[in-house]
Amino acid sequence: LPASTAGASGDAEVQAFRDAAAALKLPLNVVEDARAGEAARYEARLVLVRPDSFVAWASDAPGVDAAQARSVLMRARGG
Image 1 (cartoon, one colour):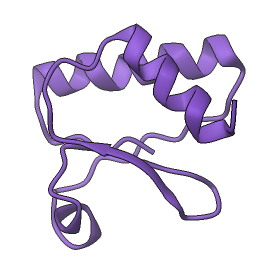
Image 2 (image 1 turned 180 degrees about the horizontal axis):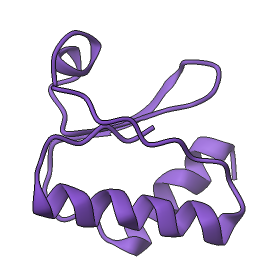
Image 3 (image 1 turned 135 degrees about the horizontal axis):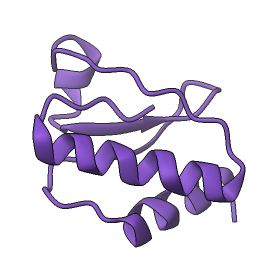
Protein backbone atom coordinates (compact mmCIF):
# COMPACT_ATOMS: atom_id res chain seq x y z
CA LEU A 1 0.00 0.00 0.00
CA PRO A 2 2.04 2.96 -1.09
CA ALA A 3 0.97 6.03 0.82
CA SER A 4 1.97 9.21 -0.90
CA THR A 5 1.74 12.85 0.08
CA ALA A 6 4.26 13.97 -2.50
CA GLY A 7 2.06 15.65 -5.07
CA ALA A 8 2.77 15.28 -8.79
CA SER A 9 6.00 13.26 -8.50
CA GLY A 10 4.35 11.06 -5.88
CA ASP A 11 1.48 10.47 -8.29
CA ALA A 12 3.96 9.17 -10.91
CA GLU A 13 5.58 6.94 -8.32
CA VAL A 14 2.25 5.53 -7.19
CA GLN A 15 1.36 4.91 -10.85
CA ALA A 16 4.64 3.02 -11.27
CA PHE A 17 3.55 0.72 -8.44
CA ARG A 18 0.06 0.33 -9.93
CA ASP A 19 1.51 -0.58 -13.32
CA ALA A 20 4.05 -3.00 -11.84
CA ALA A 21 1.39 -4.68 -9.70
CA ALA A 22 -0.88 -5.09 -12.72
CA ALA A 23 1.97 -6.57 -14.79
CA LEU A 24 2.79 -9.00 -11.96
CA LYS A 25 -0.92 -9.76 -11.38
CA LEU A 26 -0.62 -8.69 -7.76
CA PRO A 27 -3.48 -7.00 -5.91
CA LEU A 28 -2.58 -3.49 -4.79
CA ASN A 29 -4.62 -1.01 -2.78
CA VAL A 30 -3.36 2.55 -2.69
CA VAL A 31 -4.03 4.59 0.44
CA GLU A 32 -3.15 8.27 0.61
CA ASP A 33 -2.18 9.38 4.07
CA ALA A 34 -1.43 12.77 5.59
CA ARG A 35 1.96 11.41 6.71
CA ALA A 36 0.80 11.30 10.29
CA GLY A 37 0.54 8.47 12.76
CA GLU A 38 2.05 5.23 11.46
CA ALA A 39 3.22 6.77 8.16
CA ALA A 40 5.19 9.41 10.05
CA ARG A 41 6.91 6.69 12.04
CA TYR A 42 8.66 5.44 8.90
CA GLU A 43 9.68 8.96 7.80
CA ALA A 44 8.79 8.00 4.23
CA ARG A 45 6.61 9.33 1.45
CA LEU A 46 5.95 5.82 0.15
CA VAL A 47 5.26 2.77 2.31
CA LEU A 48 4.44 -0.71 1.03
CA VAL A 49 2.49 -2.79 3.52
CA ARG A 50 1.80 -6.47 2.84
CA PRO A 51 -1.64 -7.97 3.59
CA ASP A 52 -0.23 -9.41 6.83
CA SER A 53 0.51 -5.79 7.94
CA PHE A 54 4.27 -6.25 7.56
CA VAL A 55 5.98 -3.12 6.22
CA ALA A 56 7.87 -4.58 3.28
CA TRP A 57 9.43 -1.35 2.02
CA ALA A 58 9.52 2.37 2.76
CA SER A 59 11.26 5.22 0.98
CA ASP A 60 11.52 8.96 1.13
CA ALA A 61 13.72 9.14 -1.98
CA PRO A 62 12.13 10.83 -4.99
CA GLY A 63 11.85 9.29 -8.41
CA VAL A 64 10.80 5.65 -7.98
CA ASP A 65 10.49 4.36 -11.54
CA ALA A 66 8.72 1.34 -13.04
CA ALA A 67 11.76 -0.96 -12.74
CA GLN A 68 12.28 -0.07 -9.08
CA ALA A 69 8.57 -0.52 -8.30
CA ARG A 70 8.59 -3.94 -9.96
CA SER A 71 11.69 -4.97 -8.01
CA VAL A 72 10.16 -3.86 -4.71
CA LEU A 73 6.92 -5.75 -5.40
CA MET A 74 8.76 -8.89 -6.45
CA ARG A 75 10.80 -8.87 -3.23
CA ALA A 76 7.66 -8.21 -1.15
CA ARG A 77 5.89 -11.20 -2.67
CA GLY A 78 8.90 -13.38 -2.01
CA GLY A 79 10.35 -13.76 -5.47
